[in-house]
Image (cartoon, rainbow, N blue to C red; front, side, top):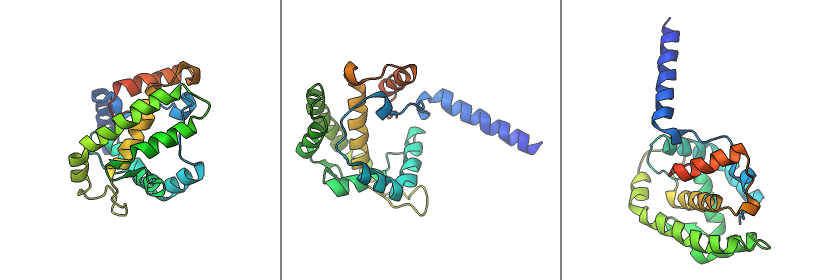
Length: 192
């Protein structure tokens, strides 16, 4: 009887969180499957960083989506350390723009989007510096987790979200799942 009661209470609380915060659970569609956008990061590097820090980063993302503070995702910091694109909240805009343009080679529709979105995202990350600094002093979500800077993760997130939201029709797969993801991205400030 107690198990049923606690299960019911947990289910009601979970339902309340989702209803109260529709942004807490992103749609299952994957950004990369919905939009063919340029990404200047090598697959092997991304895989290496995910293998090292994927669990920590997933905990951080879930915490943020449910209203937690903007902690640093170590996958993004790993990528930044390897590329020099972001150091804390200092974004190397020229390097990032050049990297995205190189990844968009042969797709000129992306150039104006890249040239406007990367500096805009860098400004947002810089504006978040005080909040990110406070979050870096919080204990980790799991005692075994390292504490990483939030700047690289928010820069990567902003770049991917902005590119996805601005995806030229030529590169966007207009399926019900992808349209749902686009609506979610346009509605939820930290959606994905």
